[in-house]
View 1: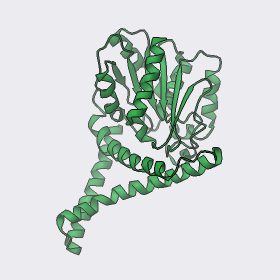
View 2 (view 1 turned 120 degrees about the horizontal axis):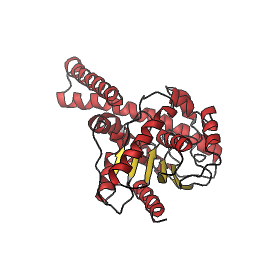
View 3 (view 1 turned 180 degrees about the horizontal axis):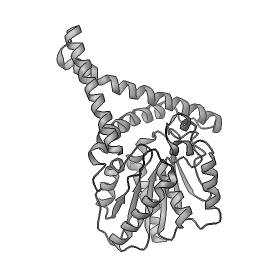
View 4 (view 1 turned 135 degrees about the horizontal axis):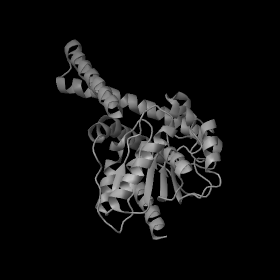
Length: 304
């Protein structure tokens, strides 16, 4: 479903760009190439403006919660530009082309298998570069598409469970690792609260709103309402987790996360927390430095 929605959106944007280019050419005598370039710049600039507002809100909340953190203008601009590229790449290419396809997977029997769980308004296509990188290092990889897109997070638990069991059956591994982006980390926590951590050797979350996000007030869907700051669902999830043994958690967050804010509170008791700067929310799934830290956590747990 997510892939179809994105394909329709991309087609609508493309049609709008063509219509605008034709208008610039016919009504204002722009050269066709210049008209097309100018028209194509409109959605890019709109995306940049929306992301800029998100970064500004994130910076405001960061100053309120961690005033001593001053990453600097260069890091903020780096995060903004990187997020523009990552968002366009994700929503207008990667998820449309690869969302319905299996991800690359390795065959190293001595490597921990890895399940990749995406976040809100995404599908498995966002993971393809990371999956290819893991596969080149011998890790078997599997993934899920979390649907219904706007449904409650607990509805994703059977999908995560099936993917875990599928990966275990395919590889013969007793336990697998999970890397989850954004809302995917909450789906994994809900799975663990219901089924325990016996099949999971490690969990790494990237930009997951473990305490919720202020920006959820502007989103749509049952899952979004569950991701509001300290929502009733998040408190109930924490209560379900209490007293249960937890697989080793590594929380990777960015102080320039433009979706999950305030950023610095987004961790879990007992988790190893890695705090980064100069990365936006979607870019966390593409950043090679993040990949390396995630793999380090997985391999460390596998050796243990």
